Image 1 (tube, helix red, strand yellow):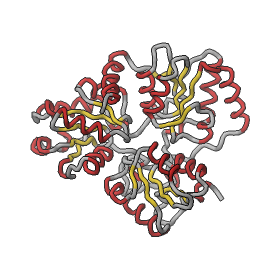
Image 2: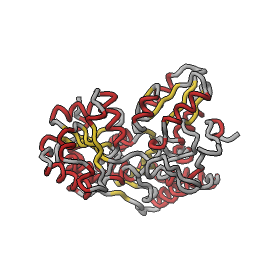
Image 3: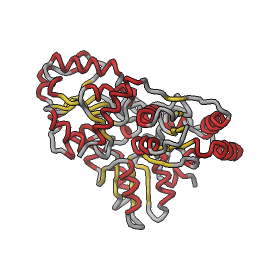
Image 4: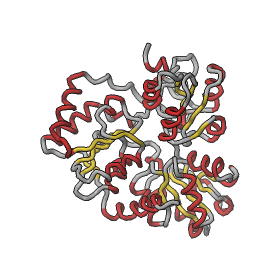
Length: 390
């Protein structure tokens, strides 16, 4: 029996879209899973990775995001979410090379937080983030002009999710805002509303809406969605002036797939199942779940769960599969019936990691991620504001 079968991810006549073979018109843009995953790496690559890492010794520090493949996580010195890993990198000043097995914005954050003598490496430069790419610096600058023309920019505080580019973090710092993670978004919004009357939340509309409505008690009517592809964001001046939360029209390509139908289906199939989802999921999914929390919260919740309990997890499949292996005494299934990995995270595979480590061991720095000094300065202001949150 395969791992995906044990997670109850099965073909069905109507619902299963195996790795992008079809598209789902009910899904938001970008949630298809393109292409087949590469074949598992052969044992020879494993030995090459071990040898190259041994040659580098303490000069290299490998970070592995929770959504990475098992074959990559095996070589990670630490695992975690994006911000935890960036802080871990900053806490290892003796490491000359920081190899970030994640996506581009994460490597940027690590470069911002580490010292000048450290070099941050991304094994595959094509490992981006669809959510981060949904907000460009030019689009956000235009949005701020729209807010200024509506007379609300002076009372609006930007709050940007960690899952954003260095440029967006710098914009946030320039305008007196803060960065947030999925675990401290509530505190970030409370702080922001103490500074101004409105919040511009970038780039994930679902985390912003879920935090504002579920945690702070705002009404869905207090939230409007700014669409960068429409004139004026598709909003009237009156809507901007009445809103408390101005949400950017962005979303996670994995978490955006889960639907209310997914929740209803798993409850019908598994009596007593606990539905645990990430706050990047749609508002109706979060509302129907039993528990909601960040990646670290999901991991901790499963560790504390009693033996024999059943769980349906609404988060990335690599992590769900790893948690199922780690907790064989619990029934852990993927919330959706569709096989969907984070396709950009999966670009980091063992062949890329081997190439990176062997290049570094031979004295050749490849795929270095560098944030320019001005962008780094303002992005760091926003990150430091997050660290200063009460």
